[in-house]
Image 1 (cartoon, rainbow, N blue to C red):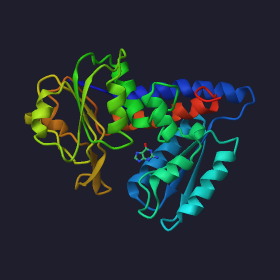
Image 2 (image 1 turned 90 degrees about the vertical axis):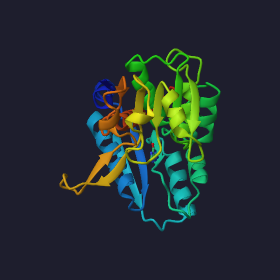
Image 3 (image 1 turned 180 degrees about the horizontal axis):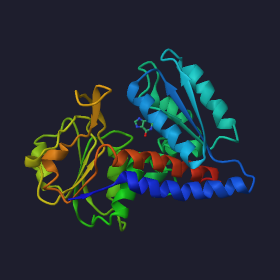
Image 4 (image 1 turned 135 degrees about the horizontal axis):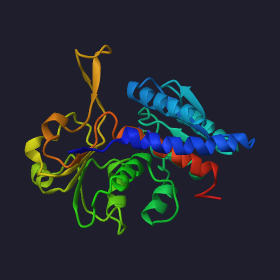
Length: 293
Ligand code: GUN
């Protein structure tokens, strides 16, 4: 079994971006600037936004986290986004999801200027992605594609099962993996909560992407030999062994499958760091006006 080491690949990409940022700064230019809006006290969202800010600092980007209480109105949030849209010194804007129930995420995402939508969630970016036009790819699917490409994983004609149909992972990834291109030429099945006989599908798959949100769901007896496993799950479960009282596990029972699969992403250190680095890559593209002039 070979580990798909997202931590080390993301470090390499970080190094490359930092080099570019250092050279911008030494030429007297401002660095790229990413703004993250964080609403409420969701612990997972706080952890993700802190990690994004830390990565920005490591590579020399400016980063600003704007926090609002869970009671913020949708109108006030929209006004804040519109102000950021007009600020020429901000290249990327993300609103951390999920949002409180009284706020409609599709209205909020559509309010972000598509040129600053480095999460790739805006309908213009998703539409361009579908049509193979220049756009920002959503960060998690983009990070997974980079791992597949970097490890030279064969996708041509392979059966790929994606479990989880969210707008931010499963659905866009199903499009990217079924393209007619060198690193993405799979026959994709997109499974979800209403899928019947999931074990029959997992046993047939050459590549399995788990984005379900159920800790340790995928086990040894559900997979065939030499399958490639990509684990997008980041679940906090209680643990006596850690100081904090909790630990992170994926949607895959790593110990159970590790001797049967050919490649697997660890949790943590697999897809997570690739998601963050993809967001930073998009922010640099925005700064350089590569996708949209
Ligand atoms: N919540 C979970 N993943 C993401 C992500 O990639 N971007 C944003 N904005 N929110 C998320």
